[in-house]
Length: 450
Image (cartoon, rainbow, N blue to C red; front, side, top):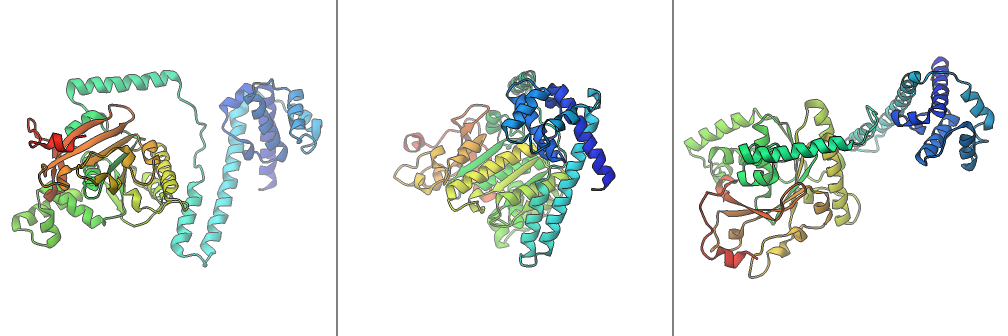
C-alpha cells in the first residue's frame, strides 16, 4: 500500500472512530467490522465500541478506555493518549458513509490480493492434480464477498405483508386455480403445495424404482416450459439418458424402444420432434458421479452469475460424497449446506433421497413414513417439503399396477399427511393425474392402507 493511500486510510479510520464515539447509535448503520480496520488500534477500538453498544452501555472516552483496559488492550494501542488523539478529529456525522466506504474498499482490495496470491500458489502446486487445484481455487474465490452490504432483519410489517400475500395466494387458488410457485404438472399435488417456492428445499424420497427421478425431472421439465433456468446434478444417469426419458414422457414413446433401438417410424418422428423442443430449454446438466456439496455450490453460483438460475435438482444425495467419516452426520452436513444454498441463491432445491429397504419387507406393504428416510434425520429437518412415493403394485401383482401415491409427509407452509393419488405410466416414465371418479381396485384399501 503506497504512502498516500496509507495516510488517507488512517485518516478515514480516525474519522470513523471519532464519529462513532460521539454518535454510537450510528454503529447500526455501517457495514464494517473490526477486521476491516487497517491499524491495530483501529481494530481494538472498533471491537470495544461494538461490545459496549451490544451490552447497552453508554459510550464515552472514559467508558471506552475502561473497556479496553478490561480487555488488556489499552496499553497495547497507546493508552489514553491514543483515544484523546482520535477524539480531536472533527468531522460531521454526514461524512461517515464516505469514510466507511474508503475503509471497506481498502479491506476488499486487501482480500483480493490475498486471494490472488493463494490462487497463484495453487496454480503453481504441481503436486496436486489440475482438477483439484481448480476446485480449491473456486472455493477460495467463492468465499470472498463481492458485495458486503449490511444485512437488515425483516421488520414485522414486512412479515405481515408476506403473510397477507400467502393468504391472498390461497384465496386466489380457491377462486381461480392459480398456483404461485413452480408446478409439478400434477394438479392435486400443486393444490396442496401451492407450487414450489424460491428458497425452499423439497425432498422426493422413495424406495428403489418408485419413480423418484421421474417426479423430480417432471418438475424440472415443467419449469423449463415456463422459461425458467434449471440446473440438474445427475449423479446416477447421464445427460443423454435423462433426455431420452424426457422424450419418452413427452412423446408417448415406449422407453424400452428408445433404449433398445427398436422405435417404429412414427416413434422416431416423435423422438425427433421432442428432441427439438428440449433443445430450446434453459437446462444444464452436471452428470459427474460422486461430487460433494461444495462442488455443487461452486457450480450453482457460477451458473447463477453466468446465466441466471431458477431451480436446482440434485439426484440423488445418496450418491454424493459427504464430509467426515460418519455417513449420517455427513449427509446432515450436506442437506444443511443445500438448504443454505437455496436461501443464498433464492431458488428452490429439489433433492432426491432413498428410503430404507426394510420398510418394504413383510406380508403387508405399508406406506412409507418419515422415519424410513435413509441414513439421516437431518434430511427431514432441513427440508421444507418431503414427498414420499409409494407404488404398491410394484410389490404385489394383485394391486393396481398404475396406481401411485405421493404422500406429503412434511409441508412447512401447508397441509401434511395428504395422500395425492397419481397414475404411473411406466413405459413412458411419467406420472399423470389420477382419473376423476376412478377408484382403487377392490381389496386395495384393506390390504395396503395402514
